[in-house]
Every structure is written in C-alpha cells, then in structure tokens.
Image 1 (tube, rainbow over the protein chains, first blue to last red):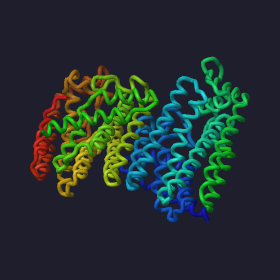
Image 2 (tube, rainbow over the protein chains, first blue to last red):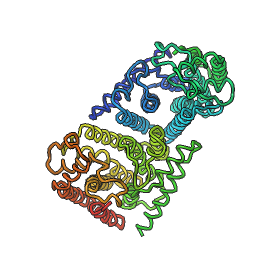
Image 3 (cartoon, chains in turn cyan, brown):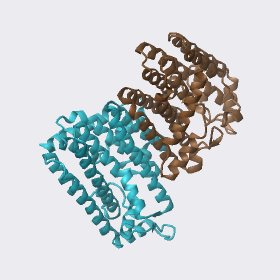
Length: 309
Length: 309
C-alpha cells in the first residue's frame, strides 16, 4: 500500500520534472531532459514522501512539486560537479558537460536551479527557508570537497563536515519539509529530520566506499571517479590527514592509490561508521508513532547500508 | 529627500550583501566579498526602491533584503558569465574566475544563487514566484546569447529576445516586487513593470553600444569584451543575420570587427532604438500618480540613455 503510493508519487515526480524544464531554448530543453532522463535512485523524493506519510499526510499530490524540487537541486549539482570533475559519464550515460560542452553545462545547471526555485515558490516562507538553507549547505559542502581535492589532503573532521553539508543537509530538508506539510508537530518533524540526517551520512559513506570497491559496470561510472571521497573514507579509518599521494606515484597513480585504499582496512572502518549512522537513524525513527510508512523508512536504512551501487 | 532615502537604502543593501555571504568556507567567503566589493551601478536595487516609493511605500527597510537579492542574482550571473567568456577583469578588478580558478568561480556563483533564495524566502509565494520566473528568463537569455556567440550569427529578433530575457526580465521583476510590497494596486504595479521592462531594454542596448564605442578606461573592461552584444547592435541596424566574420579575418579579428561595427552606422541606429525604448518607459511611468520618486524615475531614463559607461 505505502509502496504503491510511493511508486505513484515518484511517477508524478518524473512527469513534473520533465514538464517543468520545458523551454523554447533548445539546448536547455535537450540537456535538461537528458540529465533528468538519466535516472538515479530518486532517493530524496522517496524520503520526502515517506516523511510526509509517516507524519500523517494523506495526499501526496501536495508534495509532488516539492519532491521534484528536492531531486532537481541534486540534479543541478550533478551537472555542475561533472564540469568540475571533467566526468564523461554519469549513471552510465554521457554527461551534459561531455555532450554539450562546458558553457552549456554551466547554464543548464543554473537553469535547473531556477526551476527548483520556481517549484518551491508556492510553498511559502517556512518551506523556502528550509530549502534555501539546505542548498547553501550543499554548495558549501561541494566547495569544501573541491578544496580537499585540490590540496590532495583530507582529515576525518573535514570529511564529516563535507558529507554533512553536501549530502545530509538535503536529506534532512526533504524529511523536514515533507513532515511539516503533513502537519507534523515540531517533535515528530525533529525526529524525522534526525533520521534523514543520519541516513544521509550513511548514504554518503557507503557511496564513497563503493567508489573504491564497487563494480564499474553496476556503478555506471569508473572506480575512483570520486577520489576525494575515497580519501575521506580512509580519513575515517585513521583519523588523521590522508594524502592522495598522486604526486609520488609515477605509473597509473589512480589504480595504485585505489589498491592502497582497498588494502588499508579503510573500507571496513567506513562500513562500520555507516552502520553506526544507520543505528542513529533508526533510534530517531522509533520515536515517531508507528505506521506502514515508518516501517518502510526502517527498511530504507538497510537498503542504504547494504546497497551495492 | 528621495535621493537621501535611496542612498541610505543602497548603503543598507551593501551591508546586507556583505553580511549574508559570510561563511566559514574561506574560498566562498573571500570570492563573494571580492565580487560584491567590485562595485557596480546597483541599478536594480535602485529601481526596486524607487518603485516601492512611487507605489506609496514608506519604509525601505522592508525591501532591503529583496533589493539585495535582486542585485545578487545579477552578481551571480556575472561570476558565471566570466567563466564562460574567459574574462580576466570586470569593473576594473580581477574576476573571480581569474583569481580563484574555474571550479571555485562556478561554486561561488552557485553559492550566491543560494543566498538569493535565502533572502527571498521570507517574502512569501507571490514575490518568490515573480523572482523565480525572472531568473528562469535570465538564464534562458544568457543561453540564447551563448548560442549566438557560438554560431557567430545573430538576427534582430534573436537579439531582442536575448536582451528582453537576460536584462529586462530582472528590471521588471525588481519594479513589480517593489511596488507590490508597497501595496500598489495591480494597475500601478503593471505600469511600473512596463516602465522597468523598457528601461531594461534601453539599458542593455546602450551597454552593447558602449561595448563597441566606449572608452576601455571608463568601462573597466576591454572594448569588444561582450562581442555577441556588439553584433546585436549591428543586427538592430540591418535587421538581418550578421556574421561575426572572425573566421574570415586573419590579423586581429576583434579590432577589425569593431572597426567595421563603428563604421556601419549601427551605433546610431542602436542609440535611436534605445531612445524609443526610453519613450515607452516614460509613457508607462506617466500613468503612475506623480510623486518625487516618480520624478527620480523619470531622470533615471535620461541617465540610462546618456550614460558613457
């Protein structure tokens, strides 16, 4: 029942996303449909819907544009990330950057951000403030990551700050907004936000681990594509500064580094860390009144921690 | 009296801008303060304040964050423009792109956009919808311009579409929002919006003319830095497709093209076109009840059309 609702909601999100980006400016139209059509787990809209239902909401339609907006923030970020990382593929498809060039990729990302804003506008001051604060944190997190990538160094504290801002902030906002639209009291909204924040941390740690050990076929991108995160996982392991060492290694430094990461025990430590975040998420979730949506959110935790791509 | 109010309002905007971009992420903090501190005419906040006053508003403080947001949309666009144009200077100072590199310039532009959103959030659904629609148009206009620049071709119709979206849309939104916050009825808000739209068109045409004939010292950037717009001035002149001809000219193609533009009579035609837009702006303005703010808006038209930088 909850699963059916979510499936219908996600279908509506897809339709909304494709409808909202339509424009007579051909390159924006094509590039936007391309990136939206490239798939993705739609994790953030799913989370928003579940929080809405867990908080007692009974008409998903009222949060479809909001769920689409949350997904679109994430999507816009990916388009800009791919410029900065010179990535050629994403989710197994060519990136906007690789197909339309840097200038149009930059403008497509900007365009998607403006559409986020357009979809959110009707929700009023409080929701827009939550969303704005989350996007500020997200861009700050991306920037801290770029600083780490440039310096080739990262420590545990910085890694945690990065994943908290670039990933957990939007997870949290999705849950908070979904629950508040449903009319949740502040306590329930707080627990769901806490759940989502920790789920986001676990999600990102697992993502970074998969970047080191994942199967490129399943992942849809090359192993090591998100190197700074891989380094972050190592930082979790030894708690001090990690240097990428690229400057020191002459032949195929990425393979060399990846091998070193896999052998270091960092992966196991990072997985344990993700498991701890999952426990925190579960603890917060159990403070919310029981419901089929809450059960589904419980299962979501396991999916996040055990996923292979 | 109006001038004093505006001056105080603009001072408050500067302060707000510097305060709102503060962050513990050093590179974003430094780059944001750098671009905000690089000056600019602050034309859009000025326009918003005047519309607010002309519509009967009596406490500029209530629109200071909104005026800062409008200026910040413009500023964020400049940061991203400079990446795409490989510009090294802007308003006589080094660009974010040149000083911090492409990655951080991209992220700084994104960051400023998120701060726009943060400042606008408290104003509620209608204002946020107006602002969102204007920023959508702005990015569309920027994209159409990039398409024209890439193809080296532009016609009169495309040029008008570009300047309407990339410049006039934000002028219009500034005036509309300012007047609505002041409690203007729909008719007055409509006239002020119409005024601002035409003022924006005139403003951009004059900007493009100055890019061809302006003094680089006064302009703070090299002549021809915004080449596609210069081509636009020519398109206004002959009403058909203009080819930049860069491929045809071997030695110093930009100087060659600029010379050709200056000799073509295009500048005079463009100035006449700007004058026509100014007349339309004035006509709309005179439908608004007389006030000292309206008088100031009238003088603003002359300043736009006659400015030398």
